[in-house]
Amino acid sequence: MIRRDDVSPSRKLSSAALTLFLVGLLTFVFRVLAQEQPTPSKAASNRSAPSPAAGASSQPIAFSHRIHAGTNAIPCQLCHTYARRGPVAGIPSVQRCVQCHQTVTPEEPEVVKLMAYWKDKKPIAWVRVHDLPDFVRFTHKPHVAAGVACQTCHGDVAKMEGAVQTESLSMGWCLNCHKERHAPTDCLVCHY
Ligand code: HEC
Ligand code: HEC
Ligand code: HEC
Ligand code: HEC
Ligand code: HEC
Image (cartoon, rainbow, N blue to C red; front, side):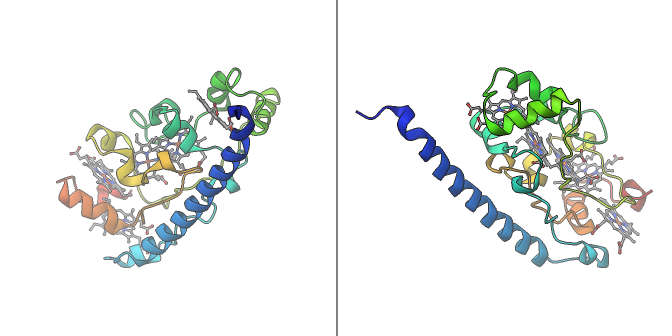
C-alpha cells in the first residue's frame, strides 16, 4: 500500500507545473485577444497590451488565487475589502495574510517569506497588474452595487495563480457595457 504522504509532494509539484504552464498559455492567448479586439476609438488603440508584469512569477511572493479563491473558496472581498465601499478594491495587508498563516502551513517556504515581512514590519511590494491612466475616473463601488461580477471585468481569477489582465480596459470596452446596461456615457462620468 502506498501512503498518501509519499506520493502527494511529487503529484503536487507536477500539477503545479502543469497549472503554471496553462496559466502562462492562457495569459498569452488573452494578450493576443486583447490586442486583436476591435478598437472603436483612437484612445483604445493607444492602450498597451496587458502588463507583462502580470503573473505570480513576477510577484515578491508566489501568491496563488487558485489555492485561495479556488480550492479554499475564500471570498474575493475578504481580501479585496474595499471593492464594495471605496474607490479602489485594494490589495490585502500583510496582517490580513498573517491572520490565517500564523496557523495555516507556516512551514511552507513562501509562507516563511511572508512571515519575514511581518517580522520586519515591511509591506509587500506587489506588482500592479491593472493601471488605468490618471485622467480616467473608475470606481468599483457603483459596479459592485449594480451587481456586475468581478469575473466580468477580471476573468476567472479563481483559476489564476497571480492575477492577470484579461480585458483591454479601453474606452470602447467601458462604453460598450455602459450602453448595454444603460449606465451613463457622458464624458465627465469617466473623465475629470
Ligand atoms: C466594471 C468592471 C470591474 C468590476 C466589476 C470589478 N473590477 Fe476590479 N478593476 C477594474 C478596473 C478597470 C481596474 C483598474 C483600476 C485603475 O487602474 O484605476 C480594477 C482594479 C482592481 C484591483 C487592483 C487594485 C485597485 O483597487 O485598483 C483589484 C484588487 C480588483 N480590481 C479587484 C476586484 C474585485 C475583487 C471585484 C469584485 C468584487 C472587482 N474588482 C470588480 C474593473 C472592474
Ligand atoms: C482566510 C485565510 C487566508 C488568508 C487571508 C490568506 N491565506 Fe494563504 N492560504 C490559505 C489556505 C487555506 C492555504 C492552503 C494551505 C494548504 O495547502 O493546505 C493557503 C496557501 C498559501 C500559500 C501556499 C502555501 C502552500 O501551502 O503551498 C501561500 C504562499 C500563501 N497562502 C500566501 C498568502 C498571502 C501572501 C496572503 C495575503 C495576501 C494569504 N496567503 C492570505 C489561507 C489564507
Ligand atoms: C487570500 C487573499 C485574496 C483573495 C481571496 C483574492 N485575492 Fe485577488 N489578490 C490578492 C493579492 C495578494 C494580490 C496581489 C498579487 C497579484 O496580483 O496576484 C491580488 C491581486 C488581484 C488583482 C489584480 C490587482 C492589480 O494589481 O491590478 C485582481 C483583479 C484580483 N486580485 C481579483 C480577485 C478576485 C476577482 C478574487 C475572487 C475570485 C480575488 N482576487 C480573491 C489576494 C487575494
Ligand atoms: C460590464 C459592464 C461595465 C463595464 C465593463 C464598465 N462599467 Fe462602469 N458601470 C456599469 C454599470 C452597470 C454602472 C452603474 C450604473 C448605475 O448605477 O445606474 C456603472 C457605473 C459607472 C460609473 C458611475 C456612474 C455614475 O452614476 O456616476 C463610472 C464612473 C463608471 N461606471 C466608469 C467606468 C469605466 C471608466 C469603465 C472602464 C474602465 C467602466 N465603467 C466599465 C457597467 C460597466
Ligand atoms: C465609460 C467611461 C468613459 C466614457 C463615458 C468616456 N471615456 Fe474617454 N476614456 C475612457 C478610458 C477607460 C480611457 C483610457 C483608454 C486607454 O487607456 O486605452 C479613455 C481615453 C480617452 C481619451 C484619451 C485618448 C488617448 O489618446 O489617450 C480621450 C481624448 C477621451 N477618452 C475622450 C472622451 C470623450 C470626448 C468622451 C465623451 C464623448 C469620453 N472620453 C467618454 C473611458 C471613458
